[in-house]
Image (cartoon, rainbow, N blue to C red; front, side):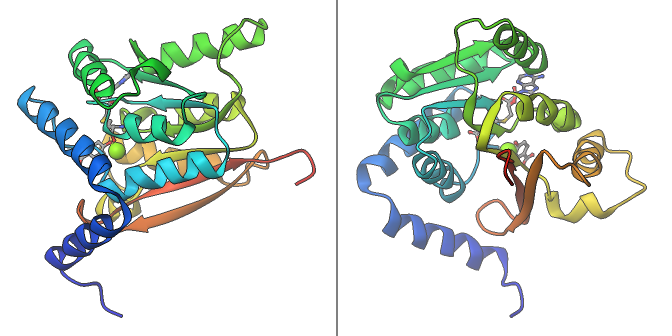
Length: 236
Ligand code: SAH
Ligand code: DHB
Ligand code: MG
């Protein structure tokens, strides 16, 4: 079947979310988008159905500890936090103090502020210290059940490498924006974001620590996709 036009795939996204999420969650997400817009944040959060997929995955994994790389206004963070439930914890890493502040307000309004820590700073530095603390046996969240990588794309392989080391066997890592309108197919690209994704694929080739798959998506955000990585249990 041919790929339909973007108006149709966007309508389908809305049709699905109208049926699949209740009015309370919809209102909470709408308020988050509104507040983020008003604060001047870019509108680059995951689509509603992609965000809800993160919630569904967190629940399916029985996740109690989740790491997010790239918070923005906390749209995806809210859904991850709903996915882990009241006993769960989400640590989300964000470079911009302004984005972090907007996110904290959105998380509080959504009623999940208590279970989320928004840590401001460069995500790679934060991840390195999370890894090093865990190696020293310090108290803290690792190993993670679920990691969502969605910050600057040029360093996706570096984020993924650390994520693999701090995720439990059977845990999941989702890397967002790994299709980007097919630009990943261009071997000549000089775009650092696209190169980051290509380097991630090169890194994953033959990597026996994980099993990974790539999903292309169409809908409210055009043609994009994400990569799902599971950390192999020792008997895989
Ligand atoms: N996950 C969010 C969207 C994140 S957009 C959602 O779907 O709702 C990407 C975010 O990564 C931006 O807020 C940007 O400020 C942040 N970012 C960019 N470079 C970063 C870095 N080096 N460390 C931490 N965060 C970074
Ligand atoms: C864009 C989309 C994203 O999901 C993201 O994480 C960063 C940028 C974009 O549409 O430009
Ligand atoms: Mg993204």
